[in-house]
Amino acid sequence: MPLIQLSHIHHTYAENARPVNALRGVSLDIEAGEFVAIVGPSGSGKSTLLNIIGTLESPSQGEYRFDGQSVAEMSGRERAQLRASRIGFVFQNFNLIDHLTVFENIRLGLRYRRDHLKNENERILSAMDKVGLAHRADHLPRELSGGQQQRCAIARAIVGDPQIVLADEPTGSLDSQNAAQVLGILAELNSRGTTLVIVTHAPRQADRAGRVVEMHDGSIHLSTRRLA
Ligand SMILES: Nc1ncnc2c1ncn2[C@@H]1O[C@H](COP(=O)(O)OP(=O)(O)O)[C@@H](O)[C@H]1O
Ligand SMILES: [Mg+2]
Image 1 (cartoon, protein in one colour):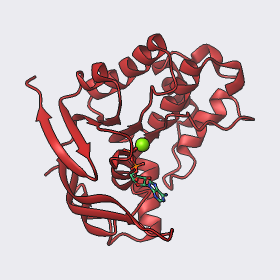
Image 2 (tube, rainbow, N blue to C red):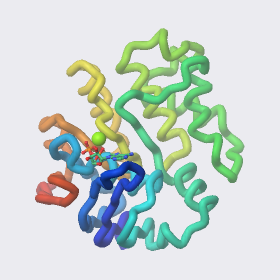
Image 3 (tube, rainbow, N blue to C red):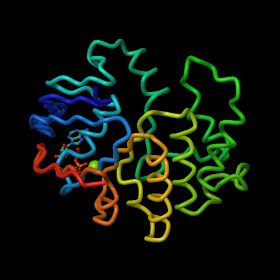
C-alpha cells in the first residue's frame, strides 16, 4: 500500500473576494522510500500540494490517505500527532527560532510528540551529527551561514525519525555550494529509507529524484519515473 494516496484532490482558497482554485483534481500515490521532486511554474499549486500532504492544509475536495488511514476522518489531535511523529518539514526560509540555540531549535522537533522519548539528548546529538552541526550546538541561528541554518532545520525535521520529509524549495535561499550540500543530506536520508518529497526549481535536483511530478495550473501535467 502506498504511504501517500491522494485521489481527485481539489483545493480552493476562498478567503478573498475572488476564490483561487489552487488544485484542480490531483491524484498521486507515493510509495514508502520514494524520492519525488515536484516542479512547475510559480503559482501552479506545488506548495498547496505539499501542505496538503503534510496535513497543514485540508483539501476542499477529494480523499487523502496516509498509510491507509483517511486523514479527513482523523481528529485534529490525531492529525497533530501524525505531523509530530511521522512527518518532517523543511521550508525555504528555515523557520528557525531566533533566540534559541541550534540544540534547542532541534529539540523543538520532538516537542509535540505524545510518546515522550527517553533518549532525547542522544537523538538531538545524532541529528546534529547527521547534518554536520555537532560543533555548533550552542550557536544562535544568526551566527550561522544560510546553509548551516538550513542544515539545522533539517536536523529539527528528522530528529523524531519521521517516515517522510517534505521540503518546500529547501535550497531556494542558498548559493549553489550550500544548495548541493543540503540536497546531499536530504538524498542521503532518502537512501537510508526516509520517503522524500521536495518542491524545487533546480533541474539538477529534480534529476536526483526517482520521480519528477510536473505541476501546471493546479494539475499534474506529467509524472516521470526514472529507472534506478
Ligand atoms: N493562503 C492563500 N490564500 C489565497 N490564495 C493562495 C494562498 N496560498 C496560495 N494561494 C494561491 O494558490 C495558487 C497556488 O499557490 P501555491 O500552491 O503557493 O503555488 P506554488 O507553490 O507552485 O508557487 C496561487 O494562485 C496562489 O496565489
Ligand atoms: Mg510554493
